[in-house]
Image 1 (cartoon, rainbow, N blue to C red):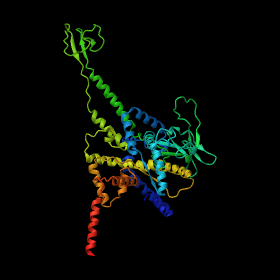
Image 2: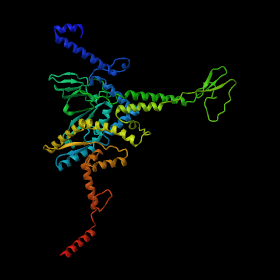
Image 3: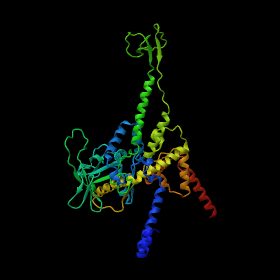
Image 4: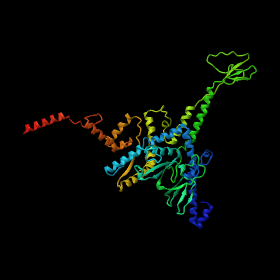
Length: 501
């Protein structure tokens, strides 16, 4: 103990003990800090920006990020490819609904309703996309802008729609982010979103037209839309995050640097392809360049196969030595691997380069990517878009039925996972079912199909085959005996019965 603590120990022992404990704790804290090199603020950490902001403050430039991502998707091939790969794997041909609960009549009615929504564009307020197309539009916007809004548009039964509603997919640009402050009822408005006192969303302030639409000169006024009419879909990466950020944010500079590098290398190759020659006059000054305009008419201005040119006394020809291109493939592959890792997909899916892939490595890479895709489907699209949307549809369907319907829910089945090698991957699935490790329905769902629908189709196929007296190798049921054989068996049974009597 120090001299001061010795003095305090005789006067105020409690204070002396507290000071000594604090000194020990401070020493321990300093030792802990020194164990983390990343916590130091030295020269090696100058490139970091360790700001202590919340998720939305750190993403204050999300609109610029979205604009950059859109420009990349328009002009950078690998950005376009990345968006296509993620959307294709998340949605594919569509995440299909599964009717659960209710009577057979109710299931049949709902199944017919969702089939109409999947096959026609009646659900789209713009009349362009069916249900699967709307899912893909949402996935594209998520990757590009980081978030997307879906607005419910009320309709009348007299409009001839299967349900008295339609939906409109909106870019986040229509959100009036200039709306901030407090309302008289105590609600808080941040970034155009209104929250009540417990932090629940009450409303969104939306423009009627896109702010970037050509011809809009004056500032538009936004309109308050209840949150019950809006679905706000985004990937939440941090607690408390209220809005999304473009998925290209970690890789945008990498992809842009690659695009600039490719342009520079292309120009370099174009220059190298221009095989230039120079004629030097006797006084040592180049008179004209091959392929360029010459002051001496057409004499030796181009190179031609088999050409022989007589040079004047003292003239000389010198050829250029353009620089070569080295390390281009290795650099490109490394950048694209970083971009694929930042986006959560494989290098092979991003580039289509399968030169170094065999079955094992391809399947292992797909396994990790499939986990990301499944996560985005089950923690993003399904709970934030499809489940609320199915609730809207069920409400309107019940209203059209004229009475409430109990026990009916809608589940969703992701699209089929593309098998790398079906001949190797299907037998293990069969073994898992036979061993009781999983159900046949679960395997069918993993392949992107509805088990009940598959069973119904199998029953219908078997019935048609039986009526047509057709037998297929795929039918494992016992083959019934032919009618003549049945009669013969019956005659033998009758004879045996009579002999016994």
